[in-house]
Image 1 (spheres, one colour):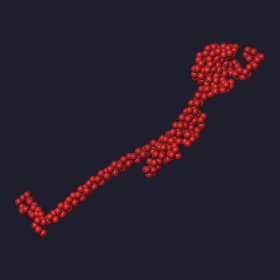
Image 2 (cartoon, rainbow, N blue to C red):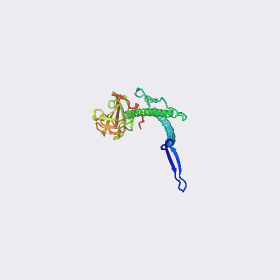
Image 3 (tube, helix red, strand yellow):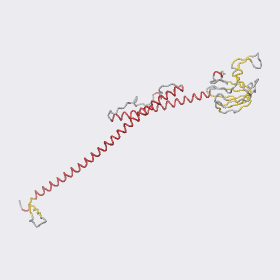
Image 4 (cartoon, rainbow, N blue to C red):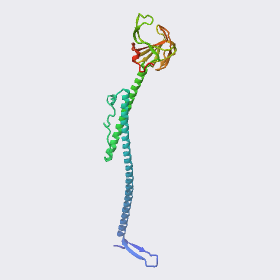
Length: 306
């Protein structure tokens, strides 16, 4: 090789020692430089890879903590869903009892002819913590759908029961089944001798309740006052239309305390006992009609006459 193909490396010590000289070929020098460069690059790569791996391990640890936390939350949610299901079952029993008390009858409602909860599970799924977590979550979701559908059924059932109870309350309030006053029956419903002509028979369409003059008379049922005033035979009279085919007539008042068109409540005072019209003494003539046909008021009463 020529002299130009070499490099001379000089090591100069701090003390007065001889300078050391090394001759190295250019090829060897550059080869060493390249090897050192490759070494630094490889070292840098491995260090970077190590740092990334360490970060990944740290991240995996954090994910495991999050996963454990979420798993505990899922199990907690599953327990709450279980509690909700038990609450729904209690509501189901309560609904059945309310229906029974209301005279509606128990059983499931057939809503919209197809029921509720289409596409959901047919029944509540018992959960097992040993089940695979993905299947466990899926079952929890199915149970949530089931409980939601059951809650809708209970809501619909209670709404229907509420409507029926309201109708029954309205029917009871519209049925003339309480005495309009306390007294004694001086003449019953049906055929009797005419009080003014003992030889003549007549059909008495109501009952006569004797009471002192001025005694308060109360509505035997709720309804709308459709007539007040004088009518032959009845004297001062009040007529109330109560709905469900019922009408009540009150006669021989000494004083009327309501006006035509007024809506009265059951038990509301509507007048005072008198002896107006075709009457022999102070009493109330009380009639009940259903779809225009006279009924014996005593057959409807739910309390005794005091």
